[in-house]
Amino acid sequence: MFDSKVTSFPVDGTLRLPAAHTDREETEMTTRKDFPVANMMLLFLCALISVSVPAETSPNTKTVEFNVKPGGVVHVFSERIRDHKCTFTYASQGGTNEQWLMSVGLSDDDRLFSCSLWRPQGKSYLFFTQFKVELKGAKIEYANAYSQTAAGGQSDVPLKPEEFIVGESTVTHNEGKFNAQLSKLTAIGRTQHDEL
Image (cartoon, rainbow, N blue to C red):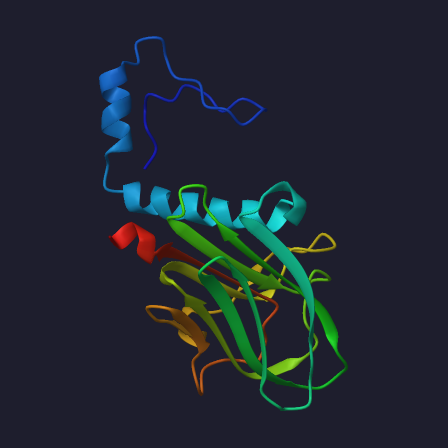
């Protein structure tokens, strides 16, 4: 995985390539088999940007607050941008209402739609009996769910892959395997606009 042509990792984190490095070699590096992983990382970066950019800076990004309510009753919260909609359906137990955020974003070329929801304080103290996130107008290409979010010096803690199921347009808990902990979920989909 490491390229012998890399000469050092300076303190600033940038890679230094030797002077003999050519454009042809660079092209070969970008066309390797790991390109799909790089593509997914780019999609994930788009979702992170949509989460961190204030809603006022772009008509293609919106972040809103909502309450996650316990009580074992099924609740639904949704947000949309133009023809694209993200819907969060859940039921939870224990504690009191928690303030969460949902961010939806559409790429400038209208080809990617992202939805992220999370508890900004980090770990949720509610026990989720079920959850489902649905993207309308997009086919999911990347999704991940977390039991804890990066807050207060803590790191994101992803759910185990067997705890949730990623479908064509939904991300849902996996009955019998989901451990009732959810603090963040991110889904990125390719819009139907791109499939024309």
